[in-house]
Length: 212
Ligand code: T5A
Image (cartoon, rainbow, N blue to C red; front, side, top):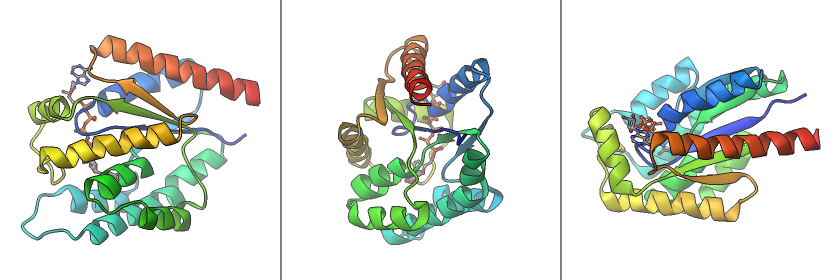
């Protein structure tokens, strides 16, 4: 049976990396075979593309160049990791996927969604995550958490308004696709965030069992 595809999303510093470990232990308890991966990245070539995208640079990166690099990495990642793993029955847990492109390039960079939808059709051939957890916090809190953890990458150097648009982009994705997306209030203490993530995973598990 084909595996399930779970993604975790949100603006900077919402706690994706922190909570992925928790989701991994939930999958282990369920005795599900899985791989954990990320975007941009996930294969050696796609990780090099990630490096290109995140490195702060003097040269302004054109929005269209940024968008095409995101999808170039995604094509490689889908071909070498995501599709083969799902086909052999493993679950795929991915830190960010195409919702990030709608939120960051579409809403954040004001590129809109039409071109992204065309690239999504070209590259993904209809593949969408089965479950997406969107961790949501006020932008300033996320940026504060991220800045306490590491030096800002190229995206983290953007202005507050950029991240406000990204956050609204995520919330409108969730509103438009409530069967797939669960918004988690990630401003709560970590244990409470984990309780909410666990509830979303348990509900997804129950509905997957019922439909199999
Ligand atoms: N991008 C990506 C696009 O523009 N388009 C795309 O299509 C894609 C796929 C990738 C960048 O690329 C952009 C978006 C991004 O800017 P990234 O590394 O994946 O970069 O994303 P970041 O958001 O930069 O990831 P971070 O590692 O900064 O944030 P996380 O993983 O969300 O946060 P995390 O877990 O490291 O937590 C940050 C700090 O907060 C603490 C943690 O201990 C840590 O110190 N924390 C909490 N503290 C208190 N209470 C809680 N509940 C906490 N949860 C975490």
